[in-house]
Image 1 (cartoon, rainbow, N blue to C red):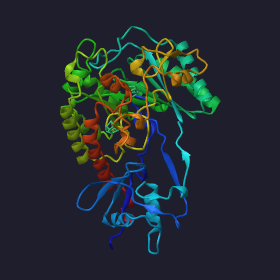
Image 2: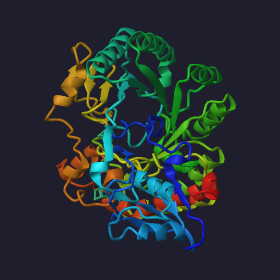
Image 3: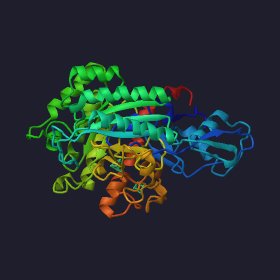
Image 4: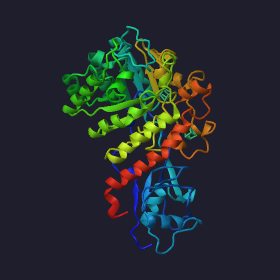
Length: 485
Ligand code: SF4
Ligand code: SF4
């Protein structure tokens, strides 16, 4: 092989690691506990080739990862593949080996070095405690899949402050270094003054306790004003806006209470936010009703270079009558693949692995689909605390508890968010460290169990290889390291 070896890594392209921004949607972030390997000197190290997943991108390049550790996604050319293959039979380093290339291959999980010599000392512990603050149950929209009854109740300023106090108490007692607050509802912008008040309170506590703070407003976008957008931008509070399709696709799922469609107002709000430099994250709920419209909304999102997440509809007690929302496998796969085609033709520089397929996070290996029961608190408008926003009416404790998180973690009756290796059908799946078996609540609703694979498994398995290929194409397009390796 006399061509130069090329090895492009997803982690080396900016904006493509597991961050909390990746999960600026309704759900709690994925829980990561992957090992970060330091590399010991290689001279006597026995190195072998794991069972890698290779996919062809074109006549020259392959995208590849190791399903057992999938630390990273890589793009390799024939020369690098040739080097990889030389480790099919375990061996040590020999004269003429490219040490830098081999070290990089080990770091990215493409080669496996003798375990004793890899310093698996650093473990990604749970760093971020996330909290949903249900500022109001009121909303001016009536979305088809909403799980809220929309009672006319708001969170008071006292309850809001006490909720934030409780978050910081739990953070301190459990060693968290970072807090993420989600200002949510109902429609959170109905309570904009409260957002500002709680932001000030949280900032003060963060400063006092040396804990870093990030905040996001989850909104339907319809009430956003220029002043609000500018204020959010100034205060470094992020904005997530829900948009389910262009025109009638969005309107069919997200009408106003009076029945009128909200698409025009929401799309205007996104452009308004952009005009003041606030970049909203677009959360798209994908259902059987709107799957066909995915390519158009994807084009709209990419034209504006926006971060996005494509989340699958989750049935709830209030939405069961709307049969056409259900995730018809073929419809969803076709719609998603058509959206992927649009991404392929307009490859964004910004990483998309954190939000491209429902609750999977392909940007880093992880063990749990979300933070439920681990590092997530949901405060309702009355100061009750639940495990998940979709179970907001099944609280387990309240703002007065000394450590609400301890009680949430100890619960054995509500949602059980198991690690993927405890889910039947997932243990040997090559996608398990990205997929982690799907939303536990959706699985339980479909099967009555938490310890089995997701009802959306066939959809996921049809889409993961495509998403991987897209990432390979993005790496090829934007990596500046093509000149080296
Ligand atoms: S249990 Fe499901 S709905 Fe609740 S936060 Fe986790 S992924 Fe989201
Ligand atoms: S739900 Fe399916 S795709 Fe996901 S980890 Fe389990 S078996 Fe794999």
